[in-house]
Length: 121
Image 1 (cartoon, rainbow, N blue to C red):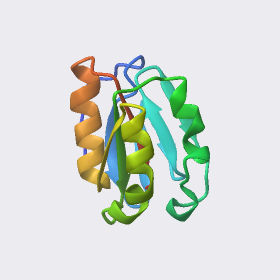
Image 2 (image 1 turned 45 degrees about the vertical axis):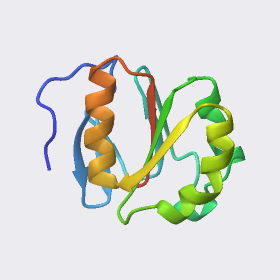
Image 3 (image 1 turned 60 degrees about the vertical axis):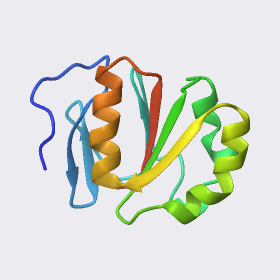
Image 4 (image 1 turned 180 degrees about the vertical axis):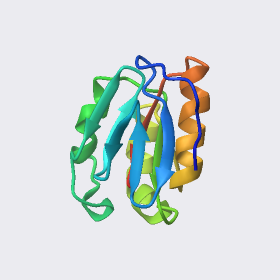
C-alpha cells in the first residue's frame, strides 16, 4: 500500500509497506529497522523474538516520547515485557500491526512529535 507521495528525507517517511518490506525515502528494507525523523537504523536485530530492553538501546539517544512497535501480526506479547520499564522512563510504547504502525509514525512525524518506530516487515 502506498502511503505518501512527497519525499521529505529529513522526516524518514514511510511510503510503502507490505510483501515483507518497507520503503523509506526510496530505500527498500526487509530487515527489522528503527526509524525516527532524522534517524534510520536497519537490521539491528534479526527477529521480533530477539526484542529486549538491551536491543532497543539505539532509541535512547533519540529521546522519543512515543515508541511504536509494528509487526505483521500484532506484537502485543513482545511489548508486554518492555512496557513497564519504558513507562518508568516516561516513554509510551504502542504495539500494533505493521500497517497501522507505519501510518501512525508518518502522522506523528509530520506533526513534529517526538516519535520512533521499531518495525518488523
